Length: 212
Image 1: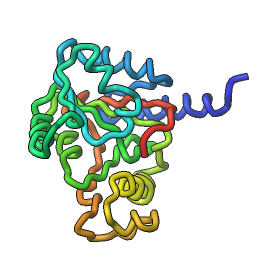
Image 2: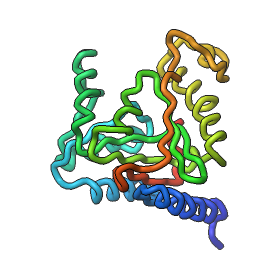
Image 3: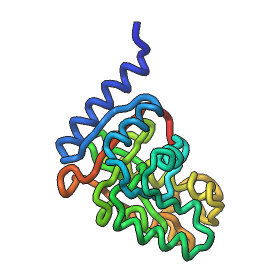
Image 4: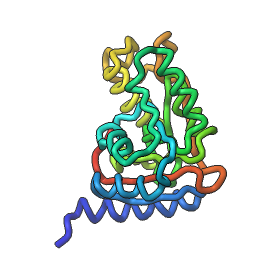
């Protein structure tokens, strides 16, 4: 007998793939880290330039090191020695062949929701890099766009504020206050409801519990 969790995840992933394709994304389902690595390498031609935003998912899957070992032109902001060097990598992202990201939430009908403090990630998702690859765990799926936004604000943002020790009201008690704090990390709320041009955005779904 199949595992009921695996059965549910497979069925949910296939539904999401159909919804994402309807919105002009490419979409794939990979269960293991090895499958995710292989899918990314298949999507990215040898020697492509690549960078990413502040994504725990990409780092936890070991994707940066995999890309370096495979000989891609990697622009890794974690290797920057100064704040100016990091800012230069943020700007270079707009000329990259590929930009990697995760998401704060994904609605069941295929809308990707992200919230940024500085906006560099959502800016690159919107325009610049030739292709954007999202790696999204099914733990981030919400019933609709309203629920996805709520997840991004009430779950992901307080955790990220705690991760970076940012002094916001949500960091203090773990709940969203819809604040206007000077250190707010909810300054740019972004909905990717379609991929434009068609196929520019690629989603790799996984049933691994990843990120926040």
